[in-house]
Amino acid sequence: MQVFAPDATGKNFTSVLTFDVNGWFGQSLDNKPFIAVDKAGNVYVTDPEGFRVLEFTPDGKIIRGWGDTGDPADTLGLPAG
Image (cartoon, rainbow, N blue to C red):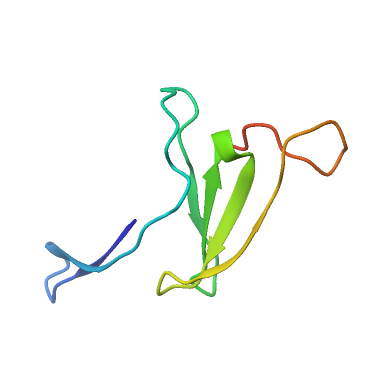
């Protein structure tokens, strides 16, 4: 994962932070991860083939992950979007 920041002109961007997301190893072209950021800057990423969602702080530290595969209503199946 990379975080970019604009220069003073707002036209050029530089990478200011890089961190790994453990789990994006699927080979499917259809089940790619999605990324969202909340108002506090926390980053949420889906790991579709891991059947989970991961939450990170703005500086890339893992906060938590949730989800699992199975039949109960509280499980996830290829989370996306």
